[in-house]
Structure formats: C-alpha cells, structure tokens
Image (cartoon, rainbow, N blue to C red; front, top):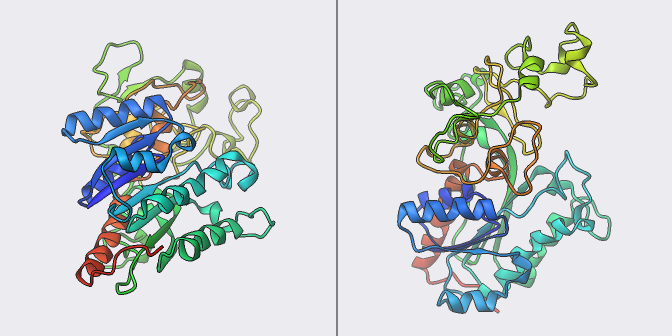
Length: 374
C-alpha cells in the first residue's frame, strides 16, 4: 500500500507506517535538520521516497500527484501530524487564531485533491477542546470531522485519545488520532492496548515499560568536546551549572520540590515549575517528552542524551538523527535532536494505528468499495 507523509518531522510517524507494511512515496517537511534526518534514513534503507523540503502551504497537491504518477483515488494513505502549538495545553491555546493552527486543515486540502482511501492525523489532546472561529469549544475537531465526512465523503471518520504507554512506549504521552476511511462496507477499530499499568495487576497484559528498562544497557555518553561518530547521538552536553543545580534532586522528582536546597540552587523556581530540572524515574514511564525542557537522567547529574530520548520514544537503534545537539538551556534556530524526537509521533503508536487502517482497507478492497465518491 502506498502512502504520503505530510509534516514528516524527524520521521517517527513514518517509521511506524513503514513497519505496518506501507511504502512511503514522498515526505513533505519544512525543517532542514529534519529533512537531513529523513534523507539519511531513506538512503540507509535504500528506499525511493522523495523528500520535499518545503512549506506545505506552497505546494499544489495536483502538481505533487502528477510528479508521483498518481491518479485521484489511487493513494492508499495520507498521513501527518501538523504542528500542535496552537492547541497544546501548555501553550497559549490560540487555536485557529494562530496560523499554525490552520495548518491542520492542510490535511483536508491535500485529501480533497488526492482522494486517498484513508487519512490518518495525529494531534495533541488539546484539540478535543479547541475552539473554532465561532468560539465553540471542541469546534475545531468538529469542523475537521465535518470536512472529512460531509465535504469529502469519507464514510468512516473516527477519533480517539491514545496513550503511548498502552502500546509499549515508556512514556505517558496522550495524543488524539483521527482516522478517515472511504468505505461503505468495512468497519474500523482503533488498536487495543498491549500493556497496562503495573498497579492494575492484569495477568493477560504485560506492565508498562519503564525508563530504566530501555536505557539501562546504553554506555556512558560521550562528553561534549570528544570527537564521536555523528551517528551516535549519545552525547552529554550538560552545562556545568545545570549539573550543580540538579545535584541532590531525588529520582523521579524536580528541583522546585526540594525546598531544603540552597536558594542559589533553587534560584527563581516556583512550586509550579514541575518540568524544569526534572529527573525521570527508572521505575516508571516518562512523562511526555517536551521540546522546551530536556529532562534529566534518573540518577546521574546530567540531561538525557538524544539517543536516550529516542529509546524513550520507541525509535529503533539503527535510526540516525541529523542536526545539532543543544544543551538544556541552549538555543538552536531549527529543530535540534532533542526537539526532533519530542515533536514526533512514537513509532510503535503510529504502527498499530496504521495496522488498524490497513485491516479496514483490506476488508473494503475485497468488496471493491474503497474510494471517495465526488
């Protein structure tokens, strides 16, 4: 089955789609470092996927379709995770008043021309309550569903909030997945969890994977100034000041909770600063990885490396990130390696959702009812 990737980022969603058995014809992504990462993976895996380093708003779907030799209705899957900042609960939540919020409907613009058999979209939890231009709470999701179902004719349009830890990813990351499928004969079901919280004690499913389980076998990271393979990504770039400030913070806790520490170590942190100078726990899944704050190692006085982030996100070890590695307090114009991971979809989650779509497409192919009707 053929697919096209929009808002590809570092390729987390792409990895899952490929693992589910699809062939990706093209990736559209604006960030140059992410495009380097994507090209590196394509070259290593000897795929024919094209990478278009473009602002998606400047791309005409008709021209893309012609370039790829596609006719309307031939593409099996159009997928992507548009920028989430406009809907994120930790942001300003400007929704469609933020130009990044409108990027969500680029998925609809491309689907209208390509007429893929299925569409798969990933977004933050805040999309469920985001207000549309009429001010209706949850209106953005309602408008998206209407555009896919009523305007474009997809008979199956479903959304569900999925927790990455339920699918073996050591991270308590919640994201909304929207699936649209052109079928009047088949049915679609989102994947059932493969893991459960340890406290539930269910014998039929293994417990959540923990941070300690996925990073314990990694070697000591290379120091910042040591020349290492650019394919490593397991490099310690922690500033000396950050090492001093995290020292004494127990595993699984954060600096502002340790009010007994010296004022010069706490600085101006308040009790609300629960993600700044935060250690993860070896015994639990991570909280959601973030692009703004890099979390600290459970027991060592350093921030986690990009390779450790990749393990926590469910990336395979052979995957290579390109671009700079910033320190916790550093700045990089485009997406550094930590943010490439934190902004991406965990591959195992993308894989199980893509597999659920594939099962539905296989059902409707048998009945020859798998095309959007104009």
